[in-house]
Image (cartoon, rainbow, N blue to C red; front, side):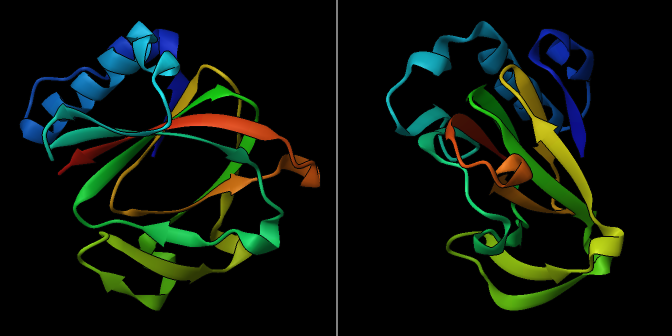
Length: 157
């Protein structure tokens, strides 16, 4: 997991395999801020290798959020407006509670609070969740439900 301000996104543009080039593309697009004005929905950046999901919703009470992980995609989550808490834990401390769905690249997990860390993510911040990170997004910080506009860039590993 990586968490930082979008102004420092260039620090993570590394030379390496295709996944790092795709993460660099995602961060460059987010840093340009052009996607912040795109309508909600799915937008291709590089076919199925890199695509963005622009979403607007209200943050949710903790009990209505769930732990998730992906096998084939890295999540680059970027807050455009609003505030959201995101919990993260290493996958080795998680127990799969809903089987992996290859069509949705998604599984649901249970995680002990002892292994979880919480990030409060504000506008201009991004968090990168790798397949080794179980994460619980969309949480209303301090239980205060409020509107959030977020872009999730899905990067194929």
